[in-house]
Image (cartoon, rainbow, N blue to C red):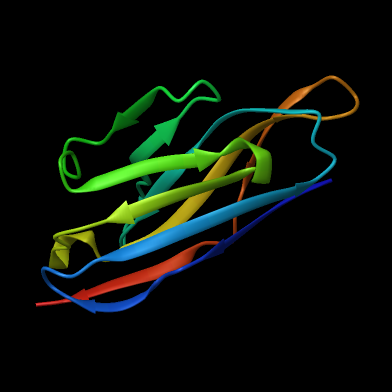
Length: 120
C-alpha cells in the first residue's frame, strides 16, 4: 500500500504565493513521475505540472512562468511553488505518483487533495 500526504494549501490573496508538498510513503520500490492536477467545480481535472525521476518537468499552459515543480527523491516528496496566484487558480489540488511496488507492478496513486483558494 502507498500513501500520498499533501500539505500547504490554504487561502491567499491574489498575487500571493503558496507552496504545496506531497510525501509518498509505503511499499515503494521505485518512483517515476510525480505531479499535481487540480479540479475546480466541474467534471474535469487539469494537469498543473509533473516531474520525472530524472527531473524533467512539464506544465499546464495556464501556470507556466508562475508555478515551479520540484522533487526530493531521497524523501519521495514533490513540491509545487505557486507564485503570482490568480483567482482562477482556486481549486482542489491533487498530488499523484507513479509507483513501482514490491510486486513489480506500476500503479498511479493519488493524494486526498488540498484546497487552494485565491481571493481577488
